[in-house]
Amino acid sequence: MAAAIEDAYRKYWQEKTKAYAQASVEGTELNKYAVAQAYASAETEVTALRSKGLVTKGTPLIAPEVTSVDAGRQVPRGSLTDCTDVSKWTLVRKSDGKAVSLPEGRRTKYITKVVAEKWYGRWVIVQVSPEDRAC
Image (cartoon, one colour):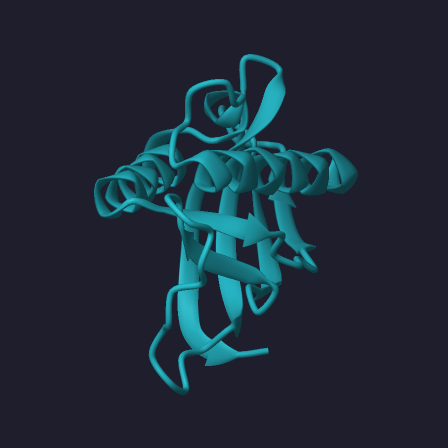
C-alpha cells in the first residue's frame, strides 16, 4: 500500500510540473492524482502564474517517504513526508524564457507533509502542506 501512495504522489508532481510549465492544468492529468486542497492549491498557483505571464522550467526533486497508512478507515488514508527541492525548478517569463529573480535566501529545499486517501479504488493526494523547515 505504501508503494501505491508514493506512486500517486510522484504522479501528482509529474502532472503538477507539466501544469506549471504551461501555466495551465489543461492537457494534464492533475485532477486524476490531486483532489480537494491539493488540487485547489495547484490550480490557484497555476492561475497566478498565467496572470503574471510566468511558467516554470526544470523539475523539482522529491524524496517522499510514507510515514503512516490507515487501511482500517472507511476511506483509507496515508501520510507522507517529503524533502522537496525546487532549486532546479526555475520561474521564467513565458514571453522570452528569461529567468525571474526571486528573493535572496528563499528556501528551496523544505519539508512537505502530505495526506493521501483511497478514493474509488485509487490513491489520490488530498492535502499538500509545505513547511518552513529545511530538510
